[in-house]
Length: 522
Figure: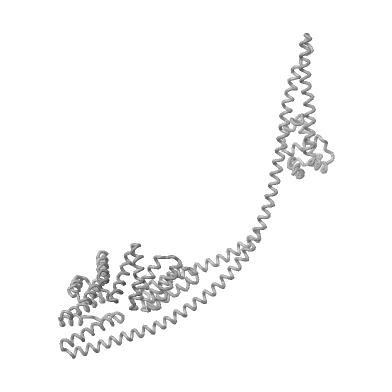
């Protein structure tokens, strides 16, 4: 048992160490994921946290956590416009979803991949992924995600100039956000719908949509978008002055969105000033347009350089993760080897334990067999005792009938009485013979036990040996007296004599002592 205790102690230490390490990694994963979702952090910080979460998930060999980390990697890379790299993590997420059979996460990754293809100006691939995502979200009544996907589908159809498919989608989205009282998304859906009508030359429809939101407070992006649309619409109807007024009201909105809006508006202004004959301003806006084009190209170049840098960082991080995984696998093999050794020791101890238990079981079976045999013999003797009890009763009856026989004067009656007594005496003679048969039965049935008693003491008489044989099968003094046809007092005296001859102390149980000598009976 000392070895078994040691084995369990070592195994407990190994498992406790493993659990402690796993618990720390799980805490690290949770904090990294929270960091990657925190919008207060910079895009670079969120990306770094997502990379840390992915590394921890791979160390834990937890596919579900790895899936969450892939999602955050794709989202973080999308936030910094690294769409191609983000797609790689989207693909890996989809492969893992198929392995796990996680349909909900699969739809989420398809939505991300579709959105990334849309931003890469590849609408065909975008619509394939977005269509599958929309189908799943529609079946599961996840309207929040479904309408985001529908919006991206509308943009993708617009890239393909399939405007007949765009219009019903945008109207459906606009009505949904109006019911939901989601002002920001409602305004953007109206702007998108007006932009669509402007491209389709449906000027009245476009004006109607724009006029419908004139009482709303617009953010900078939406307000600039509305001014661009109005400028283009007034240009289409030949009202260049009004178009110029709206386009010149556009305010710069920052490098990411502002460059593109300003590039579009300066181009329109340059063209309209040319149309009205103001070549000086037309030249000025052509120059501004060129500057914004250069700025956009510069931003694109910077983004490409940053993309290459991030690719390098990601590859380095993945190498670090691979090294950590290799180290973890090596430690796992060592732990598995130790566990295997402990398992072998445990199996050996269990074999010893079961063999010992089998021996004990066999001993118990022998003991049970002996007890049954003793009980059988005791029952036989009890049957004999009942028989003798009946015979003794008959003897008492004969003695009762014999009383007063000497006073009978009638000869015939005397003869009859004598015959009755003769029959009773024959019964009495049979009793003596049966009593001898009982003693012979005890001598035969317990001959081996009596032989064992002779080895202990040669002073025991045959009668005392018979008493010992009856004691060892748990017969009481009264039962022994009935069987051997002697008084209980004589049995008690015999017990005292037997104790002295066998050197059994007064404190020791005679029955227990004698049972030590009956192994030869089994």
